[in-house]
Length: 294
Image 1 (cartoon, helix red, strand yellow):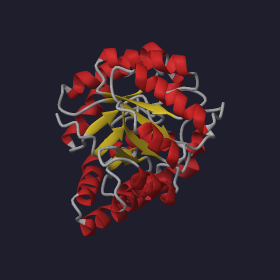
Image 2 (image 1 turned 90 degrees about the vertical axis):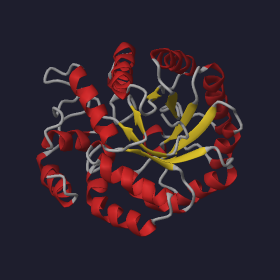
Image 3 (image 1 turned 30 degrees about the vertical axis):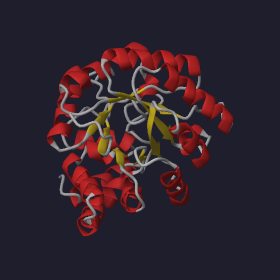
Image 4 (image 1 turned 45 degrees about the vertical axis):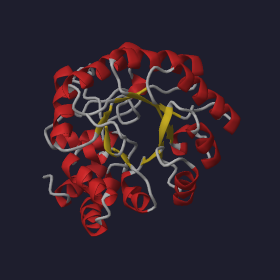
């Protein structure tokens, strides 16, 4: 298993059965499909994995199942985020004890901490975590943006290895790339901005689209990392409709609907998420077809 933390890391959906319970068999099947598709790592229990509607025990169980499926072939980065630092520390330790290779921790949501609060929050997690920590900045969901200077400050911590940057701000991404050490990884948090981020020095992607198209996304990122941008652009434009359709409604509603269309998972959610509206189904189906998946 390579742990250089570069490449495509799939933000896995969490399949539920028709009754809304964890579908253990499908969790492992989907993880195996990702590995066969050439991705470099698996990220269970993030936003796409609906972690906020699962109990702590369920989240740990999902991570255990993904680790069993991975069997040491690719690293598993387990989601452990929240808006109470002590609780996040506890979950990070549980994920580490379960065997995760690293922890993905999101900027605290709702309480909108200051930049100093973010430094103290993530430093506390990094001090206590038994595994490396990947920061996750997604201000559209959290209500707080982690600024480049804050990322650079946290990158000085020996246990903070990367950031999943999903602000949508290319200038901000450039500032992060230019102000952090060469061995600190900057991972795109948005599929449709991965190509331009790779061109400015990013190291890979935490991907939603890889759930549906692991081979294509891993090929895109690999081509960009190797400087084969003609190849990367070709794949990017073949997938751009699907990249956008995955956010036609709140993530992970569309990607779960897409996986159901592909026969890979039940279209089962937990409230407050609900199934994809009828108006969005045909555009999503057309995007899957345009990507060569249907």
